[in-house]
Structures are given as C-alpha cells and as structure tokens.
Image (cartoon, rainbow, N blue to C red; front, side, top):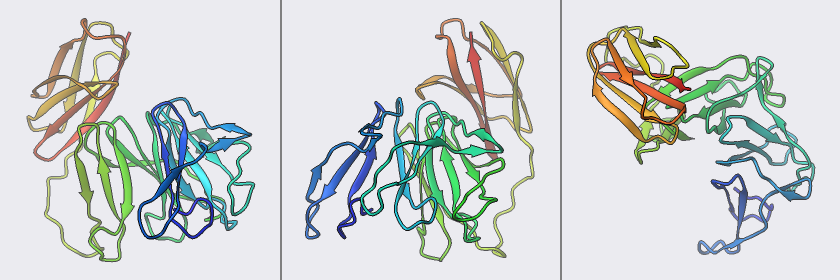
Length: 276
C-alpha cells in the first residue's frame, strides 16, 4: 500500500513487542526500501502491547487511509487518520460488536467486503484456531457489527489474507497457522454442487472449566478421531485417540489458558480451557 501518497507501494508491518513499522519504497524499479520512523499516535510510537497486526483501509470513506490494529490481548483498535494524504493519528478506539469490545486472542484483523454487498466487513484470525466473520450491519462509511460466526477452524494462530486466488470473480481466503502451514479456501459460486458430507453437529464440553488437575473433555457428534491439547503458545501438549470422551491430568502443566481440538474424518471442534 502507498503510505505516504507518493505513488510507490510501501510496507507496513507489526512486530512481537507491539510496534508498527513503516518501510518506505524509494524506487519503482526494484524493491528498494528505507526503514522510517515507527507509526506514531499522539506524537509517540504506537505500542499495542504484544503481537501488533496492522491492516490499512479507508475505514470512514473520507478518502484517506486509516489503521486497524489487532493485538495479543484480543482487541481491534481503530486509528482514524486526521492528517489526510500523510497519515496522522492522535487517538484510537476499540471496535465493538453488539456494543462490546471485540475480544479474540492474538487478533489478526482484515477488512474486506466478504459477502459482496458493498459494505466493508471485518474478519479476525485468532489463536484459538478460528477465523471469525463480523458482517457489517451498518453502512460502508460507518461500519457496525452485531455478533460473529466462525468461517474457518483449522489450527491455532490463524492469520489470513483475502484475494481472488483462482480469478473467478469471488473472494477466496489464504490462511497460515502456528505450525507453518498455508491454506487456501476457495469460495464456491452459488448453485455449484459440492461433495455431500454428513450433517453432523459437533461440540466439545469439559467436566470443569476452569479446572485444577483432572478434566474430562466430552465430544458430541464425533466419529472417533484425534484429540490434541495446545498451550497458549501453540505448542502441542498432548495428542491421543478420541472415542467420545477423554480424561486429561494437567497437573504438570503451567496455570493459564490452553486449547483442546478434536478432529475426525468430517471436521473438527475446539474448546478453550483455563487451568488454575
């Protein structure tokens, strides 16, 4: 994207410690980039805590670019540009859904009109292995959101990009995860038959949550499969066969959040656990 309105494509990237970096392209003949001052708000470099995930978009349709920023804590910050062609930020607000701050662990937001209704929507990749779709129920210039739905559920640490991968005129989705895989999700045109799969309702529940030592995970709608447990950093703590329920002794694990994922031949489901 062209950050400084000079006709050259620049790079904006977030880092682990919560900063947003600006690399200015100096030539359209090659990939010559110069590291500029970090993106600032109120005269100081932006610091969103950890895991800054920036997305650049004209949020309010006023003709200049704004900044949407995800972070480790799960909020989605909106920095509205007060400087015109050269971006200037003095404050931010958290984007809300149904009047409550969006809260998705290690949020990676992308803004795109996914349902092609002429209004920008919000998609959030999360470390809980899901991608959440927030449909814009407001206007294109004043987006509003009311609830969300999970449109992808693969592995922890989902990051995403929207593009027409197969050039059929429909937006597709590319995602990556903590384990280094890159997935392509092709949108199916209306009326094109897809391979039929059993209509199974899947869900996971825990005998206690939060739990202290032993916890039993029970699954509804699964035909065998595999259970995996990940820590907050996406590292595999356990992997074992799953036959409807599984008892896990987490005594040796650190207190905090962990994630359970059960997968069979027809799909998967995830559950967040808290060990105290």
